[in-house]
Every structure is written in structure tokens, then in C-alpha cells.
Amino acid sequence: RDALRSKGKQPPHLLVMTATPIPRTVAMTVFGDLETSVLDQLPAGRSPIASHVVPAKDKPHFLSQGPDHPDTLTSRYEAAFALSMQGRPAEALREYARAASGRERVLGADHPATLAARQETAYVLGQLGRHFEAHDVYAAVLAARERTVGSDHPDTLRCRHNLAFNLGRLGRPEESYRMACEVAVTRSRVLGPAHPDTLVSRYEVGYALGQLGRWTEALQTYREVAVARQRVLGPGHPDTLAARYETGICLGRLQRSAEALGLFRDLVDERTRAQGAEDPDTLRARHCLGVNLGRLGRWEEALAEARDVGAVRERVLGADHPETLVSRREIAVGLGWLGRWTEALAVYREVAQARQRVLGADHPDALTSRNDEAHCLEQLGRSTEAVELYRQVAAVRRVGQTRGRPLHR
Image (tube, rainbow, N blue to C red; front, side, top):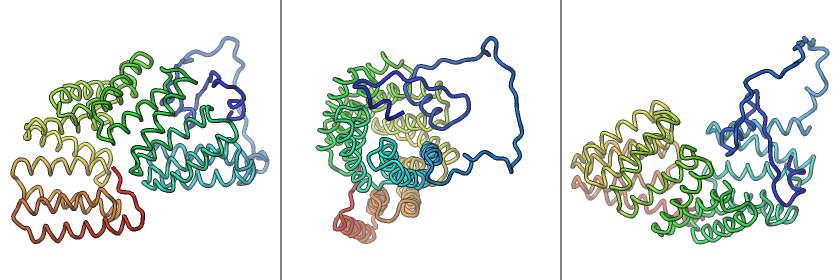
């Protein structure tokens, strides 16, 4: 597939057919911005089905082709993709690494299939927060793609887009912004300004602008992407709703919380209709709705919303899931604003302990939680304990900076 695709200057039309739940084709059908046709009738003159039982001793030779056979490596790649889609990046990383090393031995380091496996390896490294390693892999794959298929090839642009995304997670927002802008301009020229991939890059430009604190420009970018996606993909498409979500984030950052609140109310209704009340995206919209209630000083309502969202996230995602812990922290924030600092301290400590257990004591989110705990101690008049906790956090941060570890957004 990759070899055929690379022969043309423009990407060819692609027909994907799926009847059984093969992870790659199902994912492309659901998430690939494809037009969908449903075959719900048998074709005329269809031959009858003939089923046969093959004894184990007569099994076909291709069932035991060895670990480096291209079909075996393809199966590893598909298994890794499925694991990544299921939120199991550590297992996905292991399978992608095996597929990449096997393809390099059999097909060569610069073969499109090898580069595809290496690029997905970088993606799951990013999912695991290992952004330095992801950067090195992306950079190597990008160099190989530019050398073999050229700088304007869709696969090269996809790799540059991912590299721009990763630069932002490394705390290098200026570089991330510049590269995202370059990819967006090139994709617009090669694919067209309304192509989904072009809009994805413009979306990333908006994110980089937010990292740089340029929220007015980010708001304008996200609004333009949302309008374009609504026109191309439809108002209820997940990517359209994602751009509207980020629009709401920008409004909140610009202290336009009343507008943000209205947007998130509409978004909660649309997400609920399209994806269900317990879908993670619906819960994210509800979380932001609660945050903006707090910004408007409506803390009792904000606290009630945070408790509801937290309870659903705990049931659906698990007690230690990062998004569940975000909701728990928002509960503590609400309790603090209501002057219930003793209750807030207990929740902040629970979140800090969970993040240390799940993410590690030196993870930025774990350190943020410990700072929250120290602030709470200050509010309770326990200044000596607060100062000691601040010192401990500062010491961990210094060690992390000495080792070259990024402090993520």
C-alpha cells in the first residue's frame, strides 16, 4: 500500500472495506474522515458458501511462517494499533518495536513499512510521556522520509506534524508553532485548504498559540477550523466538536467565561446525543462546564458538577485514571473556594498520593498536586508544614532539570 501510494504526487483515492473487526480497517472507517457506504444486501447471483474442516496435521504452511515473515510482522503492527486505540500504550510500544525491528531486518531501514512502524513507536512513546525518546525517533523517521519520498509527500508531512506536536510537549512552543505553521501551509498547497489533514495542522497551530499565551489568535484559529470542519465533515463530526471544545477553552482563558459556559452547555448536549452521557469526550465537556461555573463564582454548582463527573469517570475509567484525578482535584478546588479547607486538604492529598503512585513522584502532575497540598496547608495556618512541602517539591524539580527532564504543560 505504501509503495503504491508513494508513486504519485497526489494521494490516490482509497477504498477501505471491512466486514470483520480488523483493527486497522475499523479504525480507519470510524476515525479516518472517510465517506461511508453500507452494503446491507447480498449481491445477485451470489455463489453458495462452502465450509470445510481442515485437520490440524494438514494445516497450511502459512500458519507457521516464522517471526520475521511479512505477514507475521503485519499482524504485530495491527495488534499494536489495536492496543494503542484501547489505551494500552505500554503493550502497543512493545509490539510496534518488534514489528519495526523485524521489518528493518527483512525489508530494510528505509522501507515505507519499517518507517510506518517506527513512527507509530514514537507516537506511543509520546502517549507514555517519553517525549525525548519520541523526538529522536520522529527526527530519524522524518530524515528518512525526506530522503526517500520527498518533503511534500503526505507521509513526510504527517511525520513533521507529529514532530511539531511533540516539540510542544517538550516545552519548546516556539519551535512547535513554527513547524506546525510550515506543515499547515504545505498541506494547504499540496492537499487543499479544506483537506482534513490541513485542518489538523491548523488545529495544532491553535494549540501552539495557546502554549505561547496568544489566546486571542488561538481563538480565531480554532473558530476558523471549526467552521471549515462543519462545512466539510458536518456539525456533529467528532473533529468539528473537538475544534469547538478548544474554542471554549480559549474563551475561558480570555476570561469570557459566560460565553464559554454557553458553548460547553451546547457541546455537552451534542456530545451526549452523538456519543452518550458516559463517553470521555462528553465528560471532558462537562468538566469544562464546571470549571467555567467556578470562574463565574457559582461554586456550589461547580462543586456539584465536579462530583458528578468524578463519580462517572471513576466508574467508567477507574479511580486512578488521570482524568478521574483531574475531577478529584476540581472537587478540592471547589471546596477551597467555599472555605472548606480541611475537606479540600484531604482530597488534595488523595490526588497527590494517587499521582505519585501512578505517574511517579517526579512527574509534573504529581508535583503540582503536592504544591496544591502546600497551598491548602497555608490556608489552614499550618505554615511550617507548607514551607517544608514547597522545599521538597523545589528539590525534586531541580533534580529533574539537572537530568534534562522536561516540565510538561
